[in-house]
Every structure is written in C-alpha cells, then in structure tokens.
Length: 271
Ligand code: PGA
Image 1 (cartoon, protein in one colour):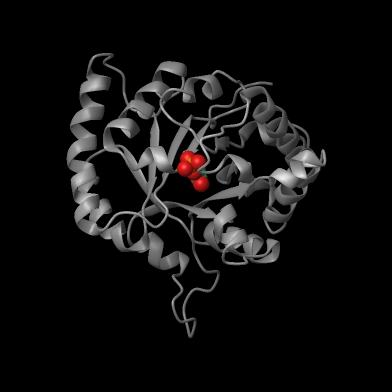
Image 2: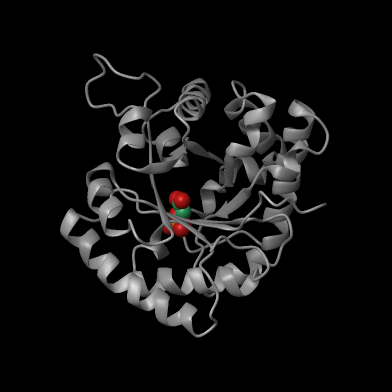
C-alpha cells in the first residue's frame, strides 16, 4: 500500500470519565517536561498527539496546551447544533473550546449507553459539518471473534459509521479499531490480527468510496496499548497510531508513548 502524506501517525488519549480539573492541571504539569526531556534528546518534533478529556476539563486543557503541539478533542457529541436536548453538547460548542477531534461510537457508548449505529452515523456527519475530525470507533466483541465474525462485523460497523460521509470528506475521518475484548483488559490484540482487520476496514472504505480512497484514511489500533507494546503496533504498515485509555492517564507513561510513536515512525510526523 502506498503511504499518503495525510497519514501522519496519531497518538490519541481517551481519558474516559477520569480526572477533575485539578488533576488535569497536574497531568499537564508533569507531562510537558517529561515529553520534552524525552524528545529533546532526539531533537525531533512531536508526532501528532491528541488528548480527549471529559467535557469538564476541555477549557483548562485547551488553555494549558495552547502553546504546545497537542490537540484536544471530546469523547462524545450530539448531532444537533442547539436546542432542547438536556445534557447534550453540540459540535459548535466543542469547536468553540478549541477541539479539533471528537471520538464517536466508542464501545462504551454503544454497549453501556445504548448508542446505535444510526446515532453514530449522525454524530460523524454532525462533527464533519462543524469541521471537527471524528474518531470513529469500531470493534468486535469476544463472542463475535470466537464465531469467526470479526472481519464482517468491523466491515459493517465501518460502513454504518461512514454512511453519511461524502467521498471528499472521508480523509477527515480517523477510524479506531478497538476490539471490545481488548479494552481495559490488559489483553491487547496480536498486531498481525489487528492489521488484518484494519486491512478489511480499508477494503470497506474503498468499496464504498472508490479504489485507493482508503490510503488517505488513518486507522488506529486501540485496546490495552501501553509504552511497552505500542511499538509492535506501530511497526505494522497498516496501523497509523493508537487510541489509548488507561495508559494515557499517567503523564510519564503517556510521554513514553509519544516517544515510542516517534521512534517507530521518525519519517512521518507533524512538528
Ligand atoms: P484501554 O482503552 O487503553 O484502557 O484498553 C482504550 C479505549 O477504550 O479507547
């Protein structure tokens, strides 16, 4: 597969429902010096780094990180611009806080909050309409994998999530392949299994939008990624980065993850 200029490696943190504003301030205070000391030794610029905290920490994170090459994003969004939707947050509100990305259809939202494929597709559409890059999450359950349905399920989830996206917009979407059985369990997928699913995800994108279109779409792996295993995923050509939950909560560990992404892909970075 040819490598596109657009496929800059992305390291994304999903903090889930963790950290108060005070804890967010402490995280940044420890993370920035740590990542600087690791990267200074290589004189390399940073890879693309994204942190998705709870909504409540977005304003603090946005101002604390304003002078650093770290993007911020949200973990969820509603599809309406405004109105009587108690408890929801619109794409415009996220943009207003400096978000560039938003995670959509995380397995916890699908399985715990009951988010449907149709809701996920509407959220992807609404994010794009506001100029936010959706991080569309897909992934099979353990039962689906054991039944030999992993490729089929991920292909269907990809097609569903992209059902309202136009061909010229699809490079703005990041897809995160997160097998449900690997999330928060300490049991990461085998990199070659993840690469196989990601290959099928790209075939699905090509079948929907045209041959070669998927070469511009970044696909991440997520599920029990940590600094000691990220390199094995980054060494796979198909895998453009990682979506990290638990290991992103510790500033020293997250700084190591930034460093590992850069070490694995020194040729493709943002700066
Ligand atoms: P984990 O979570 O890294 O803690 O497994 C990943 C995710 O849910 O995005």
